[in-house]
Image 1 (cartoon, rainbow, N blue to C red):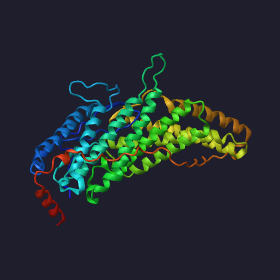
Image 2: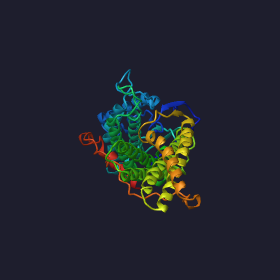
Image 3: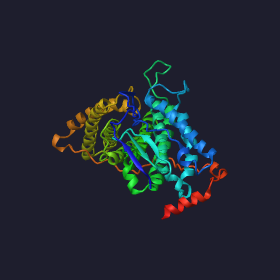
Image 4: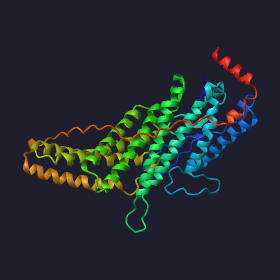
Length: 427
């Protein structure tokens, strides 16, 4: 069960897309926004007035707050206060967390109430402007997705370099970097829960009818994106640490490649063709190529520690691969920024600030030295395979909250009606 309605992209003006989203450290493919609905119309005959009013109040709060937040999704200033009815990202996340336990009452024990309300959300990555479904699990899925996107937006704000008090180049504080890792893991946890525990609640037919924003491949890719960016931050901190060995840095870099490769594998064949969707694909491609440049660089440095002609040749090939991938990543970055909505890079910092200088310099130096020692023919021209490490960073273990006690306190107005609905559902 679950009625589906998708509205074509050219049918109205509910979907607002900015022309320019400013500086991007963490890509967020827009906010899906819930549209207002009247719970009393569909549930008024089956639930106590107080429970219907609570559902309505909690969801209306989200509709209003999300409407204020969506146009400013990528503003590069920090959102620290609520002004003129607007909301901070943290306020909106809290509103969603407050709503979810009450919403879950509609699906408790397979209740037929889950099919009685038509939920409508405005899409961002799908061609259809909005998607309506008469299934409360669709609403749960949409809530988890929005919670994850809000966290990724928080991480983006944390990872935009700020002018330091000492007057040096803009930088990201260690506190912000550590906080962003926690946020990435939490966002990944929401998305992992959505894939493992919410999508299976929808029939195959309904899953095929979901907007591409909520397709399993997109949810998995976003989860892997969060983990990949978390590892990137860990690598930047390892680079800054005098205690981190080359082996540690190589392992982190190789893990980062795997996260981004898996993210790309999940979305490359999905119909992400307009606006946010196309930009999403370009972001994953850019970060995947950038990660390969990083991994080949550290792999090359370790190979160069060997004492054989073969190891030196493989080191040169790895460093040359790193240099080529770095050049390719710059082209991929430019393609991402030029795709609508337009964006731009923040000042370089962290891993790529260090490597954008080191890779060309070290590659040139190692190639010259080794080719002075060995003939051109004896240098291995094909990049060696990267080591395969198990992925260490995992999503936080997020579980759907228990149903709000208000469902126990407010026994259905007419249990016979609910029982009849269940009986009808079984026929």
